[in-house]
Image 1: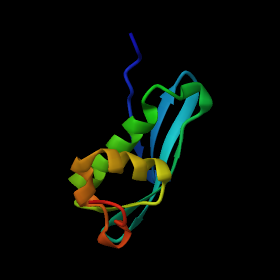
Image 2 (image 1 turned 120 degrees about the horizontal axis):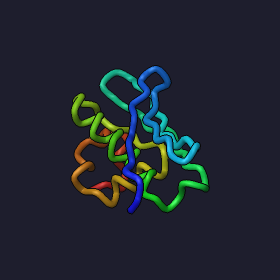
Image 3 (image 1 turned 90 degrees about the vertical axis):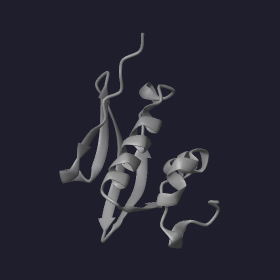
Length: 101
């Protein structure tokens, strides 16, 4: 049985975090007005393949939706995640939505 993924929002450092097996995975962001700009997803090699990157993206996007924020997915991982999940595409800032339906 796999360990449940617990994502923590660290607002002071503007990131979402997962701590597992002594390693830290993060989704970094910046706020700009009514936008949240996802800049980087970092998952250590020891944690790859466990769905942690997806859990971070899902938590970040849930936060954006709950707070009525437009999403600017500068991070390639988050952009790819949104491309695979149509339910999030309406949240992408129109200025950065190239390639989304």
